[in-house]
Amino acid sequence: MLKPEIEDGQTRLADPQFRADVLSGLARRPRAIPARWFYDHRGSQLFEQITELPEYYPTRTETALLQSLCGDLREAVGEGRAVVEFGSGSSTKTPILLECLNPGAYVPIDISGDFLRESVRPLAQRFPELLILPFEADFTRPLTLPRTIEDMPKLGFFPGSTIGNLIPLAAIDLLRAMRASLKEGAMLLIGMDRIKGEEVLVPAYDDAQGVTAAFNLNLLERINRELDGTIPVDAFRHKAVWNDDRARIEMHLEATADAAFEVEGRTFDIAAGETIHTENSHKYGPRDARILLRAGGWTPVREWTDADGRFAVILAEAQAERPAP
Image 1 (cartoon, rainbow, N blue to C red):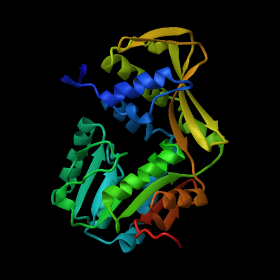
Image 2 (cartoon, helix red, strand yellow):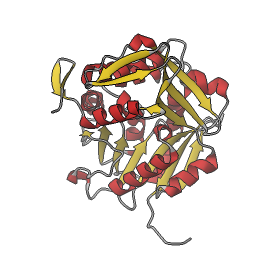
Image 3 (cartoon, rainbow, N blue to C red):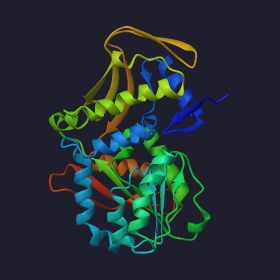
Image 4 (tube, one colour):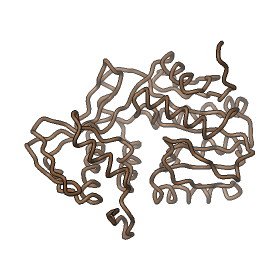
């Protein structure tokens, strides 16, 4: 039986996949819970606050980059495409793209339905003539998109270097799922964060105001609320480290004291100093990014970076598959 959970005054059923991922993640060694479960309503709000922090360079860098390349994008992509945004969040970068490309439709996809519908309202007011089709779904799997856009050429939009949250194997699977959803001939505009020094990277994921810490710890609050958890949240702290061997920032929840707790009636123990791994943010060099895209079924056709080379926006195409070069 699914347990009812209450969020913003409304009762709904807890996600069975969330339950399965949490229980298996806490039981395994090392402990790990997939980052996609950060994004309940509160988590989505906290992430939007993170994007405005002075330490968090990706959002403002990518936004400025998108604003600067409108002419190039319009020439490369053309008008009238259905823009399909994967994990749209608050769609803060989307207006730049919509104004630039004059699309035939906009399909924002997000796992948090309430947050998705909230974020779409201002876009509907700003673009009253645009067909907007919010789509609540887990975009990590191939999707059947609305039939309304079936005959439109499509542009996938995946900003924010969200691809970096996945290990390379899962990132390739996601890119292939996107290709399967958008079909051959589609294009993909994707943001990828570049490798840079720890002095820049670590503060971006461990800010002075503690917003990222609250974002990370909110996962435990969600487990307690939705899965009858008794996790002592104050016995954990946020931890962000750079793993140079894997070219990624890692986020963990580290126990500051021995703790025992229950989730869905199952008992778990964690010792002081042990962690629950909650997120990765992989960084890609130029060649790495192109190899990743090709492995996922996308052929890079254009690439843009900011003046400091911190961040890249890449346009790729789902070309016809061929067995050899």
